[in-house]
Each structure stands twice: as C-alpha cells, then as structure tokens.
Image 1 (tube, one colour):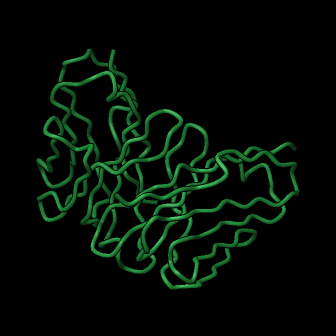
Image 2 (image 1 turned 30 degrees about the horizontal axis):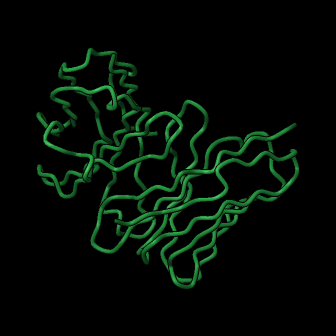
Length: 117
Length: 111
C-alpha cells in the first residue's frame, strides 16, 4: 500500500539552528500538507501546497517557516531559526485531490519528532 | 477563527462497553473527517461525512453528522482492545483546504 514517508524520524537541534524536515508524498497525489502536534495536544494545520505554491497557511506558519518541492518527489518544511516551542511532531500529509471531494482522505506520514534544546 | 471542540478528552471503559465522542464546530462545516491515532502513531483516516444528517457505519463504528453540519459523533459498540487510541474529528469549511482538528478523545480499555 502506498504511503507517505518522512525523514528523519527524530531530529534534535539547538535553538536558533535551521532544520529541514523531509517528506515523500504518495506519487500520484497533488496536494501536500504539513501539520504539527505538540506532545499530548491536537493536530494543528501549518500549510497546504498545490501546483508548486502555498495554497493556504495558518497563523503558526510565520516567516521562519518555508516549504519547497525541490525535485518533483520530495516536499520539505524548513524552519529557519528554531525556538524551544517548535518542539513537536511534524506530520506531512498528501491527498490525491482537493479534500473538498467526497471520500477524499489525507494520508499522513509517520511524523518527524523535532526536539529543540 | 474556526474552532473544533471535542469531548470528552479521556474515556476509560471496560472491554465490551460502548464509547462515544462528540465534536462541535464554531462554524458550519463543508465536511468532517474522523481519524484514529494509536499511541506513538500517526493519524489514520477513518471516514468522511459530507451531507447534513448523514450516518455512516463501519462494522462497530457509527459516525453521524448533524443536521446543521456543526456537530458530529463517533460511537463504538462493544469496544475491543484494538480500539485503543485517540480519536480526532477534523472539520473543513467551504473554500479551505486545511483540516481543523478537535483536541481528540483518548480511549483506554480495561480488558
């Protein structure tokens, strides 16, 4: 069964450092998303990406965040200068079509646990 | 902004008992999805509801979408230990791509 893969599974970084979280969405999917989940809390939307541009972003997704699809298969989330409060599980997700369509689901990756120290 | 509230936050039941989690949105939704997250795992899609008043069943799971499309529920009949996990509802409003997740209901089961 096709799946969304994320690397690394765990990333520890020092405050102020830049990190890049990587994702390989399911190959025929067109919509890509990043969500995060602070330990024990709900899943929060960060950004959606379609046709090589951001289609929607949340208030969390400020100037320190950026996304890129560098090579047609990878989808990356960059955090420029990490803060302690960026520590969370970051989930990449993809969907074949817009989630508006009936019975369309978002497939989530296993997540990258980011720890900022 | 749009908020999705989910109750209860925790539910502990004996195996074989029923379980229900409720989801309420501050705004009318275009659709609502339900996800299950096992401890240490990632959200896994269960179902999507689109129509007002819709009811869908998956074996022992029954999902409902309210008439006003602002609330939803998930009911599990005769829980089994494999049902353990956190159940999230996630709502979407017209024109938006993001899913707004509820806080989740963490279900634990006594065998």
